[in-house]
Length: 350
Image (cartoon, rainbow, N blue to C red; front, side, top):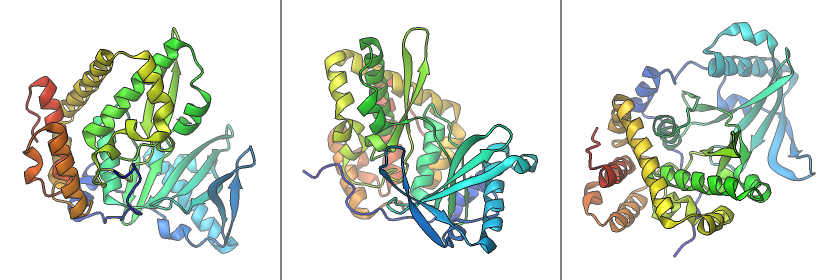
């Protein structure tokens, strides 16, 4: 059996007209003053090294004087669109401190560091190549998870907010030596995160593709795992690819859960998360239905992967319901309906 590694570099899929209109309708599709390709005009770059002297695999890019003023002004406007709905009164306080480029990601993102000169506080956002499957991933995260996601699309450019938190691989390396109480809460949150990913078929949640948000509580801490990479929204064909529990990078927290949690508790947490997803579906029923009407007609993977995934999910669920599915959108919708109907005996139909 193959490991949980993407079969090859992911294909990018265009934003089709139906999805474009959906984004327009829901204020995700403004006219941007700058696009992804504009940032490719950088003149030179230098490797970005972290505080421990390690290569981050990002490169800081530099522009010619003639381009820099225009590009920096456009980036400040984009940040205002992202954070203040385009209120340009904030622009005079914003400075672009640095632009970094990642050459190994599927969407080859640019990361922009913005500084507010009033208080020297900084924030980040990203410009990426637009990809339809990633947009569906972002929108499903916003609709079906406990997290809101801010992003914008224009033509072939995708703009995303920075999602704050401790990178999962750093968290698993440095933060597991906690009290048993906190460790149990960590393991519980991973079960819920695992369930959220599988219900909506978000893949490749290795430790470095999510962050951990820690909130101090009356006793101990509360933890929430948040996906930060949506490239693999229902793209691969292997069912296990959509279950974070099967990635070796997540083994430390898996082993912790085995030690601390009874299987009955694990089942309870899975049901709790499905119940929350069902509640979100009901509260956003119209938007969810509208999105799936578009997604089930879109192409966001290859026929081979579609056939493989529907066969593996049919075996997993012991059903032939997936046999009629012809697209990844249909598979995602069917998986959500099956999992919610299975435990709550209710019809979730859009």
